[in-house]
Length: 150
Image (cartoon, rainbow, N blue to C red; front, side, top):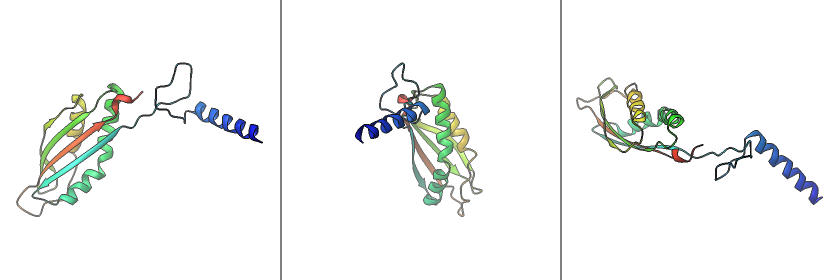
């Protein structure tokens, strides 16, 4: 019975590897078709809000995280080792639109990634402010994991 189980495991593993469902910690060796080297890339955001509804702003950022990930994915297609941190500051106008969006720091290795994020953020809408003070928001966006992609 054991040889039959071993054969079944071998065949299953071979089929999965052939279909590209296997992953490994190191790049595939030449001559091993079907193996896919998957790395984990991540986009994380820290949000600081002064003078406004912090939780509501965080909810918007959380809901739009996929847009930041899309910017990173497009960048990684052109520059696989792109990563770093981007610091953005802006104010939220009374109608909920971001105002005076600007990059104030960071160490991104690819300028186009910062431009993609900044342009996307300008289209976001936040809860309208119910005060005369425009909330000031600082976003720290960290992109990492690009160096290990194939």
